[in-house]
Length: 336
Image (cartoon, rainbow, N blue to C red; front, side):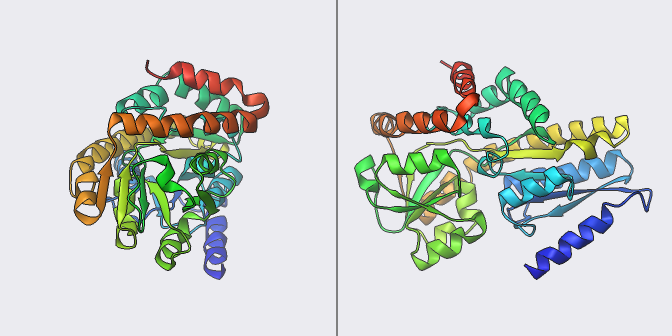
């Protein structure tokens, strides 16, 4: 806590009116800053490189990785308050501020990563970005690829049917309705754990398992403390890239446009990296060499979908309140 307060103090000092010709942009995320093994780190590094190069060093990006500024909700709050300009955070880190994002976490909504990109890059994603900007103090720069669909890992069970998950203690995101409902649908137990504490909880046995993409599993070391993995392809849960709207519009018009262009190019670089990793030692191929991996056949995946999707859809719709039309908009945007 002392370290975090000291960092925040330095950020506040740096955020004061121009004390130098250079403009610093603070970008936070919770992943290790290793652009060779983590898509979020790669996006952040490419964003830094592009801005520095194309502004002739006038725009400097300072990256704060590893959750050094707190959990995903903490980083979202810091960006909204303008303490930092930007953050790459999980969907669960933003939904307390903007609930409609929950609809993107409907289990088995997408059959392929291309389907997910088509929805998030299309009219649905554009409408959500516009509404997001109108209702918050943040601008949505886009969605960063997480490195694939979510895989279930656990210590000692070979999960092939929903019944195999009975009683398992699975990592949940504090206050994140969709994941809680999905875990409870298979009679498992959601346990709220911050992203910073998942590895420790898995190591001690306080958690039995968790959901995340293959690249995240290995980059975070989960494969060292878990033995089994089931390729459910249950969720596509991208990182949400936010930028403080006031801090963005305070930049000269040319620099605002450069930030937007650099973000889109960085996001595309992250997707290309995710595609390369998927068939490499850093993706699912590597996971099969480190863990006992079960890949569900279509009929087994359909069974999980039938068990998980309806209760999660109901839970999200109920949690949305007046924002319920966003569920219909999301469903109508899905490839058929």
